[in-house]
Image (cartoon, rainbow, N blue to C red; front, side, top):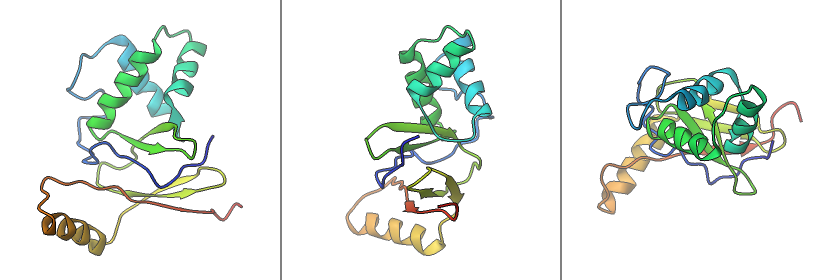
Length: 150
């Protein structure tokens, strides 16, 4: 797996609770359900291509475009975390917490830990946005380093 960089994106970052299935946006199909079920089984971040390959290995007939659409729908609903790797590839993982959170990411192995940000980060983001006339804001924060295994 590629290591992630600081351009992470939560695509909404609201982590809405729609039950661990597919969000209400878009049609619920067998193919989209297969993507959602696969995300429940993998622990690490995976690219859409990786997920598509895993589905093909299982004999699931799901097109790559459908995989991307399902992932975007899940990201919009806050059910998956989205990061961008050093080579600009977008990778996905099922959120392990429904609450707003940030990530601590190992540059060497990609190990990722979900962490809650201190209130000072949350209030700073809101204050900066308000000072510049922004509303309905969201933010992401990824902290990169090397984990204790390296």
